[in-house]
Amino acid sequence: MNGIKSKFDELKQFLSTHNIGVFGVSESESKLFNDDDNKFFTVDFYTTILDRRRDGGGLIMYISKSIKFTIVTFPFDLPNELEVLIIRAVHPGVKPILYVLIYNPPNHVN
Image (cartoon, rainbow, N blue to C red; front, side, top):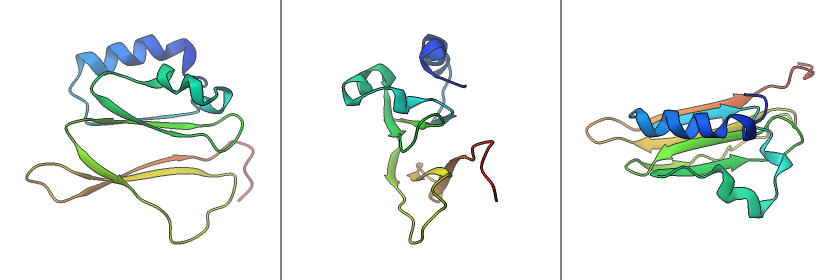
């Protein structure tokens, strides 16, 4: 999205008119905001998870409040340039599902 702030009203409208369980945004540039601005990213009926480890990039995941989930931590180190957010969600009547959101910056060298 290359910065969520200018498109946030559209995002809120989209989530409020569709039955979305889990929705992820990369390049949110959420690092540009301080902790007091977290309320800016909230959407009714969704839990918001922010990953704000570096300038630029940034990950935001919206999980419907009707879904039980846990954040998955890594048992290993990832390159500092990568941003990764993983949740394990439990939907009624279905085996748990892993949702993975990854941002690999364009200047990242493999």
